[in-house]
Image (tube, rainbow, N blue to C red; front, side, top):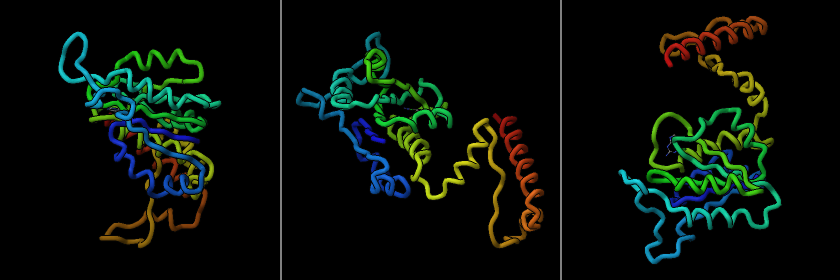
Length: 229
Ligand code: 6GU
């Protein structure tokens, strides 16, 4: 999988060299690069934004640099390009979208800033053969830009790629939770910590009882989460 992030702040992606993702890049399971959007401007000030048509507060990202930067990722690519446009007004990201995108060979993240990217950029690439456009939000709150959201999505996607995480069994356990069920509470040694004990069933050695307890605790947690939503 090839991953590209187009941004005016490439430094935001420094954490990509850390931990499991960093190792996956080193071992060529995935490749990652940033593209500085300003490299695709043509004026002396390297302008990427302008005032909104129709008026209003804030600035809008100009379409031309985005078009040039994204086109550069399309050339020579036999693989379909999945263009992910990060925007608070996109479709909410979830585990099933992560699974869908984990099958991509070529992911390009367009990290908008200010009030967003001129809407014609998404419109244009929806009509381009060889590109699939995904307008995505990571939740109901507003961030300063798409960079942090892109990092979230990259982590959710790459850990689904075979070989990226050390223990594939944990992926199997998690897959039970895609219908919105959260996981059961977990414990490790010591059995008593600050007066709090590990539930007895977990030290009983009775695997049937343990499985049942975990199922019930998971359900209990999901129910109380749903009520607080
Ligand atoms: Cl993808 N971008 C921005 N700017 N804010 C967000 C978001 C994305 N997802 C939630 N809030």
